[in-house]
Length: 154
Image (cartoon, rainbow, N blue to C red):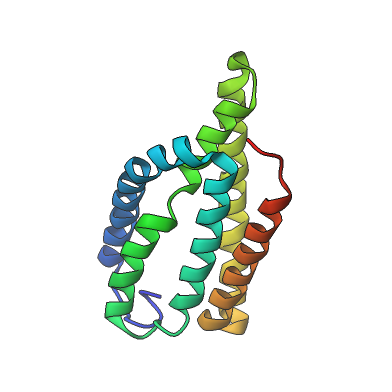
């Protein structure tokens, strides 16, 4: 988005990555108590569905800078539960001696998905365009959120 729409220099990409780290840091403090109260499955389901909604909202906001500012706060409150939430669920789902293995396995899966997703998204953006790729990502998130209802309670 930064390079396609705004023709941003590489420094702006670095700033965007710093903002993502801040969002993750803020989100950890927000979602930790929520996961404790609601449980892992409910919290992850709510976060994935909220993230899908935010991604659908991103589609019409592509050319509007205020849209990104609003999306920053929406994603901060709804979209960053992934890492702390999955770690929490992993630590509660296995025997105490296997917690580090469970968390490592989840982070390996997330890393592999990030790598494959980057290649896939790049190919989709090149062939279909940014807007179509965002809609595809939102649909995949929505399907994942709906599939969460079939998981056992954690």
